[in-house]
Length: 63
Picture (cartoon, rainbow, N blue to C red):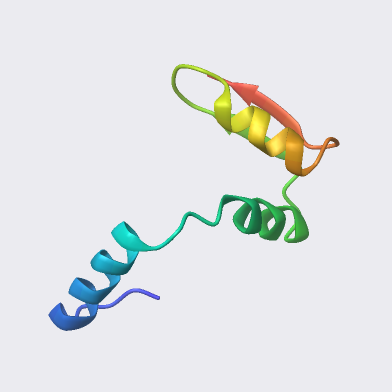
């Protein structure tokens, strides 16, 4: 949720930098929400490989 309160923004930034990455949970939530195609922008294909490990049926591409 967006915030304009400086204390909340500070806390959210600290949480963002120190909390574990929830990649699997995030991808599963996107799939549950209807996403079926994922595009990785940039060099490499690491994220495509991670998505395929989570859901072999997902379509992946790179730009």
